[in-house]
Each structure stands twice: as C-alpha cells, then as structure tokens.
Image (cartoon, rainbow, N blue to C red; front, top):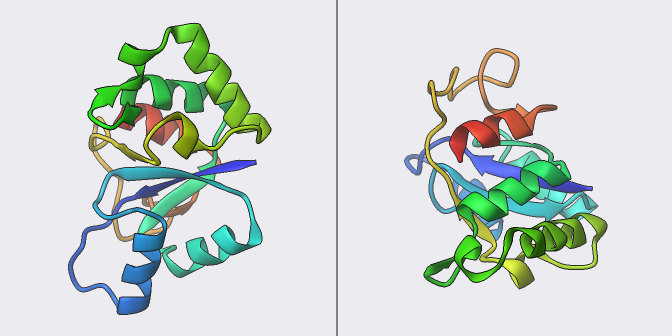
Length: 144
C-alpha cells in the first residue's frame, strides 16, 4: 500500500531529529506532499514526525488526480507532457508497485492550503488535522 504524507505545520522551533526526518521525507515546507511505501522504515520515520504531518493510505483515483493536477517533471507539468490515459497507467503502475513516483514525476507535490482551511494545526485528527487519517484523499482533494 502507498502512504501520502502532507506536511501541515511550519518550519520554526523544530527539534533537530524531527527536522532531519522531514528532510529525509522531502517535506521541506508546509503543504508539501510525498508518496511513500507502507514499509517498516517509512512508518518509523512517520512516527518521529507525527506531530507535524498528516498521513494515510492513498487510493488509485486520488493518486491519479494528484499526479494530473500537481505533478511536475522539472519545470513542466505532467499533464502537458502526457495524455490522460497514460497518466492513469502510470498511477496504476505506482499503486501496483511496478513503478516509483520519482520515475513518473518529481517526488514532491506542492499543494495549496486546503479550501475552507485547516481544522486545527496543533491537534490530532478527529479534532485537528495532524496524524493518521482514514480519509487522506478528502484532504488532498481540498488541497489540489
């Protein structure tokens, strides 16, 4: 399974271990998103940065929309380079594990702040936006 990780909180007053882990996950700024495998190593890194990110399992349709709307390769949009059907095949290949996100597009997706704003950037998911979410696709659609 693939996990989407979105950085929610800012860059000020972060402990060095958390800062380094965010760098390893390529989450340099708020509203950046990366797609990682659901492996033991990535789950350990997510545990370290749990208070700064929102994460959850991503489905194929949301991954396609993310690549189509916000995917870049260098300075060009993916949707300008490929047709919609080709992008759908690439998203399906990523979900099946045949391809990596970095082979299709840049590994970081720069998103907008969510429409209608965040609930709370300092609390966990039911009350706020941080931590594990079952509906990460809803947050991603609000941010595309």
